Image 1 (cartoon, rainbow, N blue to C red):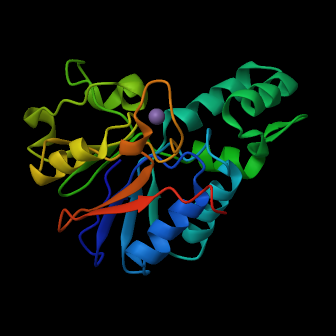
Image 2 (tube, rainbow, N blue to C red):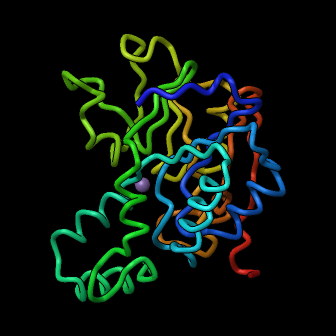
Length: 238
Ligand SMILES: [Mn+2]
């Protein structure tokens, strides 16, 4: 989907939120100090794992309703919930999400995904192309004949590669896979062809794979100045 951002006064992208509502609010309100002349692209994965999936969605939907220029993309967690909703019994669905992702607040045990959230998920595009960037949750697979129709890579591709033939040199800004903060700072400093913005905001405790001390920040990139805005996870304070 083509999106024009040049007429806004400032432009930002924000990585994976995963239910970290307090952290998102602090980033948007205290650090960015968002105004109605700014624009923010959200890179998907608003829900699951964190403490407040429904609050995060309510906040995003409310900002849009109030006239803030928030442009959310689809992440694999939103798509997975939509697919699971159409495949499984509603009580199974509820119990699965309660057990694995703490996001049963998005579900009703009789009807599945609550209509407000289902409508929101179904409205989300797979990627944005703007004057100066591409934005996608995970990556593009440029080896496919029609990479902009190949949504599997956009949702879960693990390796982001840029192909100038398709992007005409515009960087790809993406999330999905947590990178350590030092690595993300390097992508930004080098104005890398692929810039990852997922610093695993939700991982604020010892983890079996990741060193959480190098994660647990929610990041915003100022797309004009390349300033990286770092909001540490504040969910445990509440
Ligand atoms: Mn993801």
